[in-house]
Amino acid sequence: MITKDLNMDELDRQLEQFRMEDGELEQEEDIAEQVGSGRGVRVWNPFEEKKEEDKSIDDDPDFQVQMTKLEAVRDSLNRKADSARKDYEAVDKVREREGKTILSEWATTLGLLCLIFVILGLTKAPQIIVPWFGLLLLAIGFSVKQILAMLRRTANHNIMCCKDPVSSFVERTKANTYYKQQQYAYAKINEIKGRTEELDRWEKQLRKKGKLTDEELETVANLIHINEHPSIYVNSKFSLGEWMDYIFKK
Image (cartoon, rainbow, N blue to C red; front, side, top):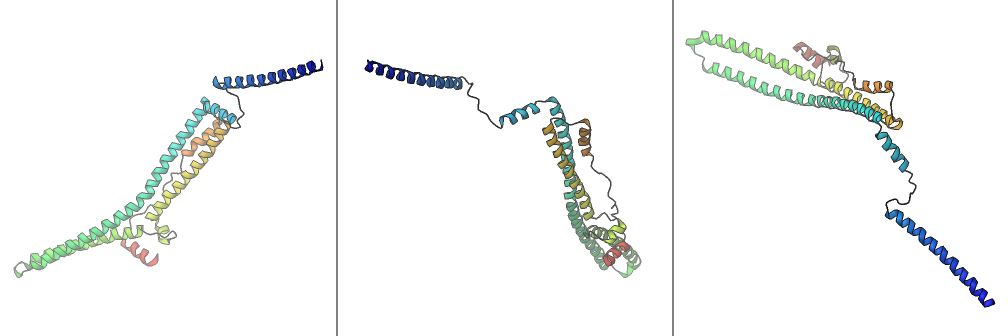
């Protein structure tokens, strides 16, 4: 009888263990079935909520419309920045080209004058002395006119190449030097850069809030209005007297 009870207890224990193992097996089969069917087991992801939130903002029509307006402002600022950079870089090209042109014209002018006087020297004869003197006077007048013209061009270029940021001559005559032209373009580039950084802040605020007010959108739209006032340095033509003043009193 005791043996029978012991056998029954052992049988109950094995049965209970079998039931537990069978339950775990069924649970594992359910999980496998869920995974196999594509349902899977939902695991908490700290970034999933943020991802779903961003997705909902991107799908918001009002958000898309306002983002399009911001991008239009950005495109306008980028075009203005490209134009200002081209103006800045063009100044060096103009300065170099003008310098080379003046050197070439000086060489041409001096070569032509030398040729004229050589021809006059070779054609001098007593029988044509009167017309020869007439040609000589014409040659001298032409030479003086050409040299003065070249001196004026050289004077203008020399003054325009002034790089002194505190030149009293430049401030007094409002000379639009190459340096002042680059300063003007550089100031515009910096202003556009500041407007672009402000636009970036508005874009972050739009992505955070999902929407901007009408007043805020108007502020964003006004970012494209760059200060286009003309430069106060407008003079690019100088006399020989001003050139002498620049050379000895600058």
